[in-house]
Amino acid sequence: MTESFEFQSIGRAHSPYKEKFAIPRQPGLVDAAKGYIELLGDCNREEILRGIEGFSHVWLSFVFHQAIKENWKPMVRPPRLGGNKKVGVFASRSPFRPNPLGLSVVKLEGIEQQSRSGQAHQWRLHFSGGDLLDGTPILDIKPYITYADSLPDANSGFAECAPDTRTVVDFAPELFNTLQTAEQQHPGFSTLIKQVLAQQPEPAYHKPSEREYGVRLYDYNVRWRRKGTLLMVFDISAV
Image (cartoon, rainbow, N blue to C red; front, side):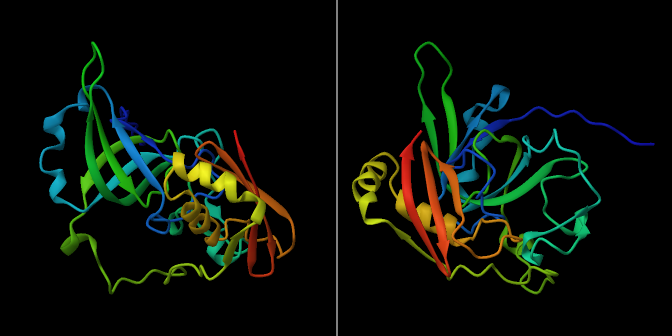
């Protein structure tokens, strides 16, 4: 007999990632990605956060809300295996799962209280290094505890080490003024672009070519093309 459960989101994540494409495949790979969680309903209160400031990192349980409409399959093709070899979905971190639940550890950057005229105070948890789509529903927040959660001798199967990020990312000279404007709105924007593209988000089955790609970060569309080991950003346009 199967059992069903119903949960209410306790918060909503806000991040630079406005679409699924180019989100890093694991948390912590792009530390320039800053975001925050806006607490909701009965969880939007000071006492629920008391003591969390003593922890440097937290676990986020969340819903892959844009994967719910797509059918899951028992076998998937992990990008780390070139997009060709299949493994069981439980041997992967694919968002297309029997239950579309995710788990990420992020760095806690601070707690903010915002006052709203005539309304209750709004509490936010700021974080960095996330791999969450903007608008992701958060189900739970737990502190990261080093002695229990860090297992350096663990076997990581086909993902024993971090992906190679030696790809060089550069910007076309004519983007100088656009980048300056974007940096004023989103400090560290250039670094964010470099770190995101260094993860080589292009589909693993695509052969190296001068094919063009694009991704939306914050309120900008970023477009690039690959030339060997060089990724050249040739256009940054405000949405």
